[in-house]
Image 1 (cartoon, helix red, strand yellow):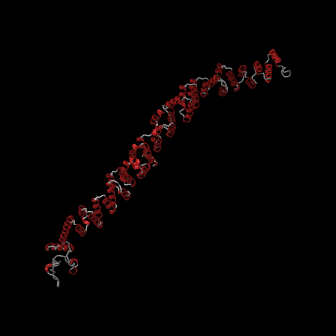
Image 2 (tube, rainbow, N blue to C red):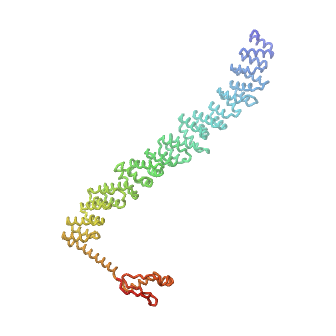
Image 3 (spheres, rainbow, N blue to C red):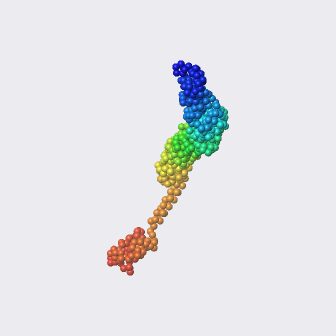
Amino acid sequence: LVDYMKDLERAKTYASQVDKKPVWSKLGKAQLEEKCPADAIESYINAEDPSDYVAVCAEARDAEIWTELIPYLLMARKTIQENVLDTELIYAYAKTNRLTDLEKFVNGPNVANIQGIGDRCFDEALYNAAKIIFTSINNNSKLALCHIHLEEYRDAVAAAGKANNVSTWKAVCFACLRAGEFRLASQCGLEVIKYPDHLDEVVSYYSDLGHFTHLVSLFEQGLGLEDAHIGIFTELGILYTKHVPEKVMEHCKVFFSKLNVSKVVRACERARLFSPAVYLYMQNKEFDNAVKIMMERAPAFEHELFLDAIVKVRNAEIMYKAVQFYLSMHPNQFTRLMEVMEPHVDHSRVVNQLRRTGDWALQLGQTYMQNVQGANLSAVNEALNELYIEDEDYESLRKSIDRFNNYNMIALAQKLSSHELLEFRRISAYVYRQNKKWNQSIELSKNDRMWKDCIDTANESADSEIIENLLRFFCETSEKECFCAALYTCYAHVSPDVALELGWINGYHNYIMPFFIQTFKHTADRLKALEAKTKPKTEEKAENEIAGTYGGLNGFNSGMLMIGNGGMDTMAPIMPHQGGIDMSGFGVPNGVYPQGALPNMGMGM
């Protein structure tokens, strides 16, 4: 029936009539070969023959006859302990949703590949069965995923807590987030953001779903973690720049030491939050960048903060840009800026910069230039002198010229020589006078009838020719009083014959009289002093002088006798005293002179 006729129905009927195990076994094998797994399983059960369990399991799997397979597997387990049997039985329970039997089996003794069958069930979306299987082997990571698919989010969080690995926490967090379970998502998220490498993924996932408020809240909670790292503080700062800009400055001030400054600064600049960016640059000692932002972005400018930063910049060129910035944007505070930068800038360069900007800039910088004029720089002096001329402030100009001489004096004198105001022309004459340009100075003073200036300049020149020309000028212009004053002032440099000549020719006898009185008085005093110097000295005074001379040579005060100092033959020569009595005999022992030596009693005139 089986081998030759291939009539399985008649064979089945025959096996039922005979009801012998070998027959059923023979029939089951034939049915299995003919792809009738359900009938084959029934025959094998009747035969209690598990020998072909591998083929039976394979055919049942292909035919998906799990309900029929379970009795066969239970029968086979009675005599055979094989991994395949236990594994297929678990799978059959899972496929038939016999979860109670499944749980009982996996918790009992078995040799099944539990992990493998659990993964198989999970992959085939048999999540309830997989949950039971993974629970039995404490695979909490996969168990959490099963809970997620079964929308058992609280259980998923609990399982993730037992698994305690970042990938599980992340999967549960994202699943809760998709399901709108924000509190559970936050709970998982706190565990994820402990790991710096996963921060960006969390931020991206929240942001893609549009849950910005919950994302910010998550990181705010993360600040309180015991192992909160720099990435949490930095990422929260970046999130604030995007979603809660009013909190950025406070966050930067409180947590500056825990921020990745470069990242937060870039985020602030992208969000156009320039004040926090300036603060971060200042705290990070990047003063150049802080100053640049304040100059380029008006909302970020703070005057006092700018002054604090500008003196600490490394690139000096920024200081000169700051000068131009204040001239353009904050002219009223320019003086204060220059007070701060005064020790750090080249004043000549600043003055040239003010000139290029315009006359108004020079006027604006006048106070600054007055403060630094003590350095006596040519550019500063000339700029201030120009301002004084423009303001017609001749008093300040005169003080500047007197105190600071480093400027183009001749150019200034030429410029002032044609000025419409008298005082400035006088200053021109004064500058010529300082440069010993006596003739130019006197000519200017003559043109303005500044006779006193003419006289003072001539006297200072000490040039007799210049003084004589001035005296003749006064005679020609009939300035009698000035002629007299010039004689008096320039007395030391005027020749009496010139004064007498001019006085006689012009009839200025009364005006030259004071000069001659003074001349005679001076001459008399000089003669008197000369006579006093050349007057013969008295005898007593001459003797004292001679005694002092001898005493000083080798006399009484030397402590040495003449004999011991070379004898009579080496006596020091007598030094006659000019203009007095010859006392050569003074001091000769016992009044005895050597033979042929007589005292000279003549008067020395």
